[in-house]
Length: 136
Image (cartoon, rainbow, N blue to C red; front, side, top):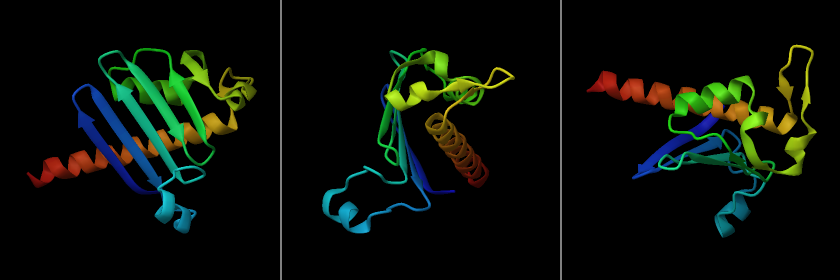
């Protein structure tokens, strides 16, 4: 479960930050260095003008670059939940440990974690936006 999900929009950049319920795992290191390394934290950085997406997962210290132009978060969300491997341009070698199941789905421990976080962050943001609209 998310402790906190934030979204910042600045020009052509959208930054979504997911702080898991165990954040910070290392309170003293966080206090001293503000390092996301090995933390329950994931960052989704969209550049909508050129359609790039970079995902950083602090828990596993993984970064991946999405290869298909991303101009709408809904499209990304759908692709992450269906078959994300073909559209990755760059990813840590651990992403290459993926395999296909009998029904054609791509499976990978690290990618599943990123997909689950994306799904949860998307749902939290969707609820926050709907709540704001109801209150206005």
